[in-house]
Image (cartoon, rainbow, N blue to C red):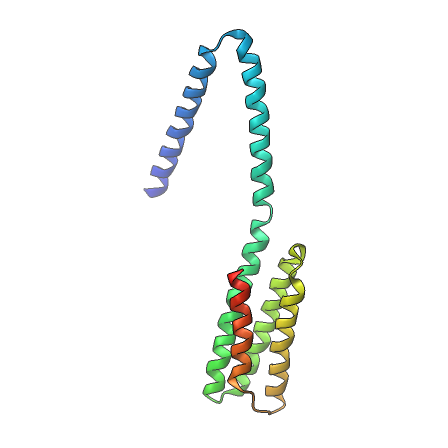
Length: 155
């Protein structure tokens, strides 16, 4: 029902705008109509160009942001597993977090911030390696990586 109402209101707005534009153009003298129509065409061309330029980067940005959020959740889960002394699961979570950070870096190729995400992924892999070798890893190292992800998300 809600979709129907949104479509209905959208159609009403479009029809109202078309009626208003037709009325406006109909009231102008013929000499002004041509210049007004040309002006309107150029404004619409500029507007459509701006919309396309603005929306081109949105999907990559959303993929990158989702990857960062997923990586953060995996880091938090790894910290939880460390507290529970479940080092195998913590190692798996860190590997997944590193992969997600790499994927987020690939999604942001064009922005030039890939190196930062690769560095974060490298830190996560280092901690994973230490865990898999049986070394104790302080939770502060995971806190540091999480803070870097948080600061990156805040940008």
